[in-house]
Length: 354
Ligand SMILES: *Cc1c(COP(=O)(O)O)cnc(C)c1O
Image 1: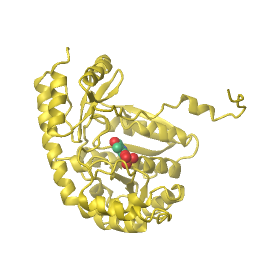
Image 2: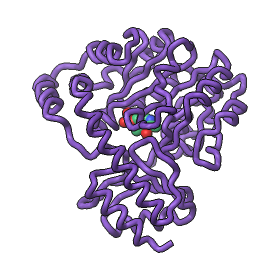
Image 3: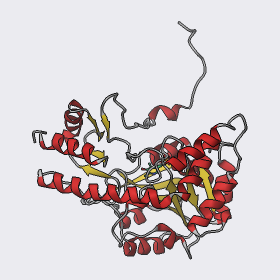
Image 4: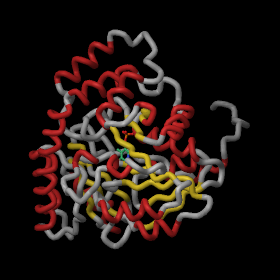
């Protein structure tokens, strides 16, 4: 037994929920973390292998080649682009860059489970606004939740875990009404899976506004979840602040080159996304036909609002070697996989006694 430690850690961390990752169960199909099923493209794998030969050196601290490449991709100046170790880190950087103790961060709930964590770790106060009865952001209620202490609002579009998306007209009206000193972060981790033309590309809303940021990631459509890189497009002075709170070198050398290679292979990767969105329709239709409620989804997953039966559903799926992501008492999120995986999932869903 080690001696009892007299070191005290921050008491408020005891009340903080842990981030619950999707489970990996050996031999089972993982539909729990919104990853894409395809492995790296040959061109990306080659760039990774090349970079691996030089990992005795520190990465480019500012990831300048990647920042420039992203800037070119999104058509914005490089001084409005910053990167992070996954966009979850970018979320954390935003809170750290904008909020002091007691400042408020508004977001919908249920939404991305990292929001309350990164908010509280930074000593800021989460203000959650329930989704509406259609599992969608209630933008009017979010507007009402803004107080003089609010510094930041996250709008997750499409929303994780419900897949629902807000439309251009309602989002534009919302942005017009948010006070100019409050930053709205449009978290578009699933942007590449959006097929509804009414769901806006956040970059079009970013243009001409000084209190909007757009967050994107290489983890989902670009297939680099294991490498950890995401980015923000934000006003210049916000970008400068994000760079100040960036943990030095936290976007590693392999992630930097892989992200560039992935942008260079964008067409191939987006073609894969089209297969996933076609499967998404098939999976949702199958679930609806089996009698499930499934909100319309614009992401690479479906949401099953099963309430108290959520855990049971996840256990049933696991008994058939399929791992979904349950949010106990609320619902299960199921990632769209390959056609074969989706068939097995649909079969599991059909055999769940309801
Ligand atoms: C997956 C996800 C992210 C980012 O993931 P990283 O792997 O950290 O880039 C950000 N926001 C939402 C809503 C997500 O679902």
